[in-house]
Length: 313
Ligand SMILES: Nc1ncnc2c1ncn2[C@@H]1O[C@H](COP(=O)(O)OP(=O)(O)O)[C@@H](O)[C@H]1O
Ligand SMILES: [Mg+2]
Image (cartoon, rainbow, N blue to C red; front, side, top):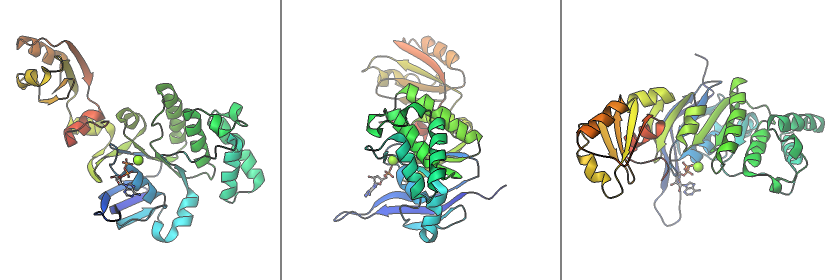
């Protein structure tokens, strides 16, 4: 096993808020990221994902625990760590008054790269981000997806071994998300280590080799997307709807139909190895759902199982 590029042990962060008890954003978490791995933090709003990313990025100090990035302690080697990472923060902080190429150029200069190198890199990265025809457009005029791609391009200017992406596709429409995913796949193929946070289970399933499920500053589970689903859910899920007032009542009579039943406000989920067979048992029990759907289990089901809540509230 090659040495991990990130190692966190008992990592914790509390925020001081005047006149109030401390906010425990990250409550002591352990994880390691291997070189070339695509590692995810999946969890709802407020889980502590951004706080963890800021500690990894050496822009926010930890309250307790050990943290090593590329073998270095961010408390002592912040500048060196920052120079070797690429960062895509949750909030884009591009310069809206400058054009796309200028944003890349200036960021490269900030890293101390010679002007000539910055020009070459800016062109390469504009091509990578599929923004060549937007090179001279002001950033304020770009779409959300384009800004996100430009931020990723900017994060790559120093050839980082690790790229940190905090909610890379939040707020983007489905097509823009897919374009972005494709770019991230390419980075992964080139061997860049990706660490990303998301509250989209499909994004985690698509992009992550391995992930931690986080909630309220704690790790609820860890594994590959498929191992998490195998461990914490059934193979299939039967979703049935009986109409808004009748779901809970119908669910009472469905416990024998599957391994486990979850009642959501708009539907009942029945966890089972064979959804079609479960649907037959629903009918045999004399229940007639308005709609029914059989699907494979997802990370959303894992999260629901572990926390009793949905990822997106
Ligand atoms: N600067 C801050 N001061 C006080 N509380 C904060 C600060 N930043 C985040 N928090 C709190 O810490 C918790 C975790 O936040 P965050 O790391 O942003 O979660 P996530 O990125 O998973 O949504 C939340 O309860 C949030 O309100
Ligand atoms: Mg966040």
